[in-house]
Length: 444
Image (cartoon, rainbow, N blue to C red; front, top):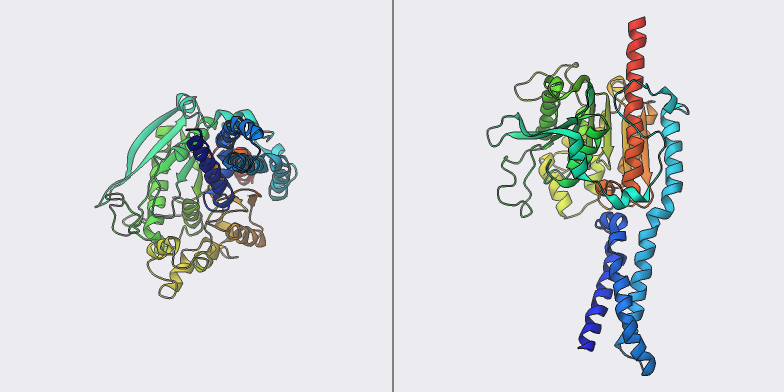
């Protein structure tokens, strides 16, 4: 019996060591780096269990499995502890660097330029708090502080209508609008995912009217579940059309949910970030026009864009992957391989729209990414940021040194917490500058 327990504990320690060492350097490291603190009890438990066996070993001094158990468990604990501590040890230095990045992008006195009459709250001082990490996103409490309207149809389609959720503050006032677009590689994801709902509730609680939308997804066999994608292989063109349609719906219905029809932000993660950037940058391209709807400059005016770990250059993104599900997803959503549809890869790349001629129509951009991203290279964000700066366009890039893809799915982890707090500053600063410019125009 004791031998069986020992073998089981040894197996657990070895498996955990494998998970931490190998998976932390893969896509799954996105989770391990932010939530491993919650699982640190596993190697600790292994060590505790190993102690009585080691007492027996001390009485019988010969090599046995108990000694191996203690070594492996201790090694697993050490590696886990180091992995846990990386974000926590770096968060203060990273926070300081982010503060400098914000000042460089928005001005040394950017916080002083924030209009105190803006109805949306923000964090005046960004500081990582362990207690907030331990408490989690507290979705239940957030739901008590905001109103919500769920599963509203915003677009009628032949195959299946598209729906969205709306979240807005209970308190009185008129609030800026955020249209939130989920990620998922263009083939998966939903407005109903817990992490998406948590972000939208958090923003609504701070003083925003948030539209959390679904859009058409392409089907990638055999990864698509039965009935998951009712639409017939939509491409990025149709997805952009959906985002624009949601934007127009939000503008037409803004007053119904305490939203300001003249203050609109687009917010996307990963593939969703790609779509919101492309939507903002290609507003007047006929290729992306909404079927049956005439878009005008007034219809699609965007106050700002938030892009977390975005795909910005499909040409380079495609070249990174060989025969893999990622490359297949790109081919499905573009409509062909790079060799077959090279012109579409450029047309569907947000970075290709940043030109001298279009610069006047590009709104302020807030970008966040992890330097250890295993899915979308941080270079995608860096190249976009570099091109935005080339034309003196307002943009912020925050790079988390330890973070992988989807780092913010743990909303109050070391990465998510400080990025979201700087995001609140960016939002109200952008609104303040917009009001200031409008006031100057009116005065003249």
